[in-house]
Amino acid sequence: MTEDYSGLTQLGQATALPRNPQEAVLERVPAPHQGLRYCVRFTAPEFTSLCPLTGQPDFAHLVIDYVPGEWIVESKSLKNYLASFRNHGAFHEACTLDIAQRLVGLLTPVWLRIGGYWYPRGGIPIDVFWQSGEAPRGVWIPAQDVQPYRGRG
Picture (tube, rainbow, N blue to C red):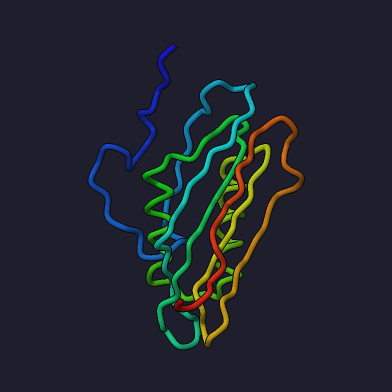
């Protein structure tokens, strides 16, 4: 059976980066092997946003893990969505949780977690973690293994 992907608007086409997360279009496609439980991981080690008060850049290493239900996120649309935060002013907690909530709303996954490993602002690293509930039994969910910020040395 061949899936129909004709409704996708970004994959295989030149697309401009969205100006902000609200304008970004996240797309989904049917999950392959529905009924099987497996973990999908996206890692964005160079995520950027702006401090909402100073306009200074903030940097994070994001790790998104999810167990699909009926849908998976189309990866180019996710890349563009994450890049749309580059000129968006929001606190670390807001960025991390907004991404998680948008994905949960789009995909209705069996389970989702996000780890936002933020580099220091004002000398203090702020890491933000969220998950939708207990991880499903029988699914291999690897550790995120992002080292906490240690400074130089």
